[in-house]
Amino acid sequence: MGTVRTKPASPAAISALEPEPATRVPTMFRSLRHRDYALFWTGNFLSNIGTWMQNLALGWQILLLTNSPFLLGLNGFLGTVPSLVFSLPGGAIADRLSRRRLMLVTQSAMAVLALVLGVLTSFHVARINEILAISFFTGLASALNSPAYQAIVPDLVEREDLVNAVALNSAQFNLSRAIGPTLAGLALGAVGVAGCYYLNSISFLALIIALLVLRLPQRHIQPSAGMWGAVLDGARFINRHRLIIILLSVPAFLALFALPFVVLMPVFARNLLHLGASGLGYLMAGAGLGAVVSALTLAAQRSAERRGGFIFASAAVLALALILLSRAHSFWWSFALLVVIGGTMVGALALTNTTLQLISPPELRGRIMSFYTLAVLGLAPLGSLWVGSVAQKLGTRFSLTFGGAVCLCYFSILLVSLPRIRKTARLPWPQLKSSGQ
Image (cartoon, rainbow, N blue to C red):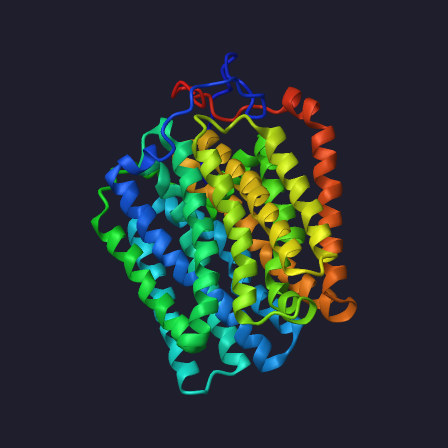
């Protein structure tokens, strides 16, 4: 089995958690000057709008069919549990095969699954078992897609634009989070649940077309002793660098205890705030709005890889806002808190993503980002399962409060420990500063 050898960090390298000096603010949208990145960004944006429309419609459909918070959580579990198993092999595949070809296969599969769900719903034969099965297979395609998606971005822009590119990716994802549920709330009344599924299926064509016309550089693929040998090489590299482990713990805790709030939003909106489908869509748009503002603010910065304190503080504020949301009784107070949750979520996750991309050796980037995917998506099913089960037994408000409290305790500890982390964390990639950042 091959072993990945890394050079020790140069004495001049600065830890990824050091404070950042003031720099000139460049053009916010400079990454879109790259033709291939602009195509990729646009295709993902349109596709994600469709995905968020389907997510909201699916939650609403399950609630109408079953009136069960547990089944909402189970659907979230089945939709994301494949990431727990297949994220790491997906990272190895992304490093060993054509990332473009892998994404074409997975995107096409998700388009077909959305179409099947729409047909079943149109003919009134969609039952909870069929819905849960389609959620599982969609999650499987997404698990194999995500590491390639993360790893392909640095191939589309210059290294000095990577921070901006990742931030703009977060902006488009969260702008779609704001637009998609809003459109879904309107579309549910106009074309019904099945119409949302058909629109999602069509939206995948935007990214598929973009992938077909991208001009990607040739990659040197290092031989290894099989897929699991490649996965273990990536795990060994991460195990040698405490900084990466700490960074990966941020999305892991959020995915387990904070982000599962999404699966309870249909129950929260209908049973606690007494809103309909349109109200749920507008409520979720609040999280998207906050996320877009945060992502665009990050995109205006020249560098983001040394803001460990900002990552931990954002996560702590998110946890506090989630606790307050669990006590909310009005639409506007809930909307305002979701704006905060959306903004701090990007502050924590986008900066963690960017830092990991910057400190990853190119030949290991797919595998390291697969661990990020495992943390964000692979642990999400466990979060969805416990949050649905606890909400079923002890109520939605208690479930949200408990998740927020666990996260607040953990990220407060990280903030207090930040000076020691800065002192002892080792920089895993000696060329982190090579771009002049």
